[in-house]
Amino acid sequence: MALQIANPVVVSKVERLAKSTGLSKTAVVDRALDLMLTQTASDTRSVGRLSALLAQLDRIPDRPDASDPLAWDERGLPK
Image 1 (cartoon, rainbow, N blue to C red):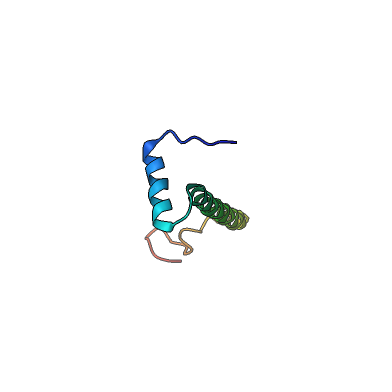
Image 2 (cartoon, rainbow, N blue to C red):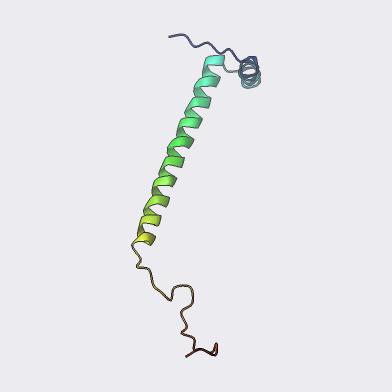
């Protein structure tokens, strides 16, 4: 299946990268896609780990004194 890139700026970038690396245009696009797919997979794993951490934090019960663990009297002194 053929791929047509209509954006001349993108075509120019592919041509410059191919020339500077000595790779074919196809190889340049292939490597760029591999890098992006690897990064995307890594980002997805990071999001999964962050979601797991947030889920653990959500399981911690809310406490009424969470923001201020000291009890205060009407004069503003700790009890």
